[in-house]
Image 1 (cartoon, rainbow over the protein chains, first blue to last red):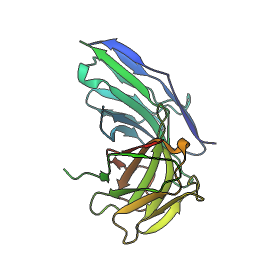
Image 2: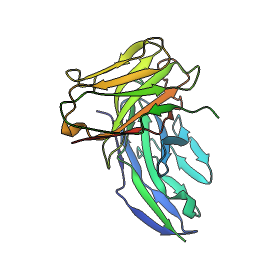
Image 3: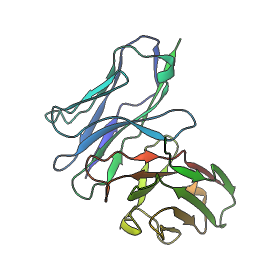
Length: 112
Length: 117
């Protein structure tokens, strides 16, 4: 079946460090891939998305590239800030029914 | 900026009682979703509406859960009777396109945190 696997957290970094959160997926067909972020006390919000192989999504300094050959969509940021502390969810929408499948989430703590 | 509204934000109930959650999506959004998010896990889809019609309720425990979106606008999710295992965050989301779509962005409300004692 369709699934999303994320690296386990929490991830703790110092401000200005490089961030990578790994995400791999299993899906039939050609899904669209998303990263959502959930700040403390708030609902999820879209961070970035990619809809086909080799697409790169980017927003607020975050990037992720849709790699079909490795079925991955890793999230990266060159220099994290304290305000990036949140839970990050990788997700896919597959062609069979357009249902969204979320990963378990990765909590990021950024220290000043 | 338009937002998805949910109420209540927090609900504490005893097992075997009935609870109801309300969601008002962004105006004009055709698709509405209810998700359950257990602590430490990602959201799991319970039910998806396009306008007033259910398009996916395969993960909804229909013996105790019900959902409706009568006029294709706001929606109510009900649990009766509540069980201890229902303690979770219940998230509502909406998207513009009919049936969601492969690339459509979902906009989430703040959620209702349910605690069943």
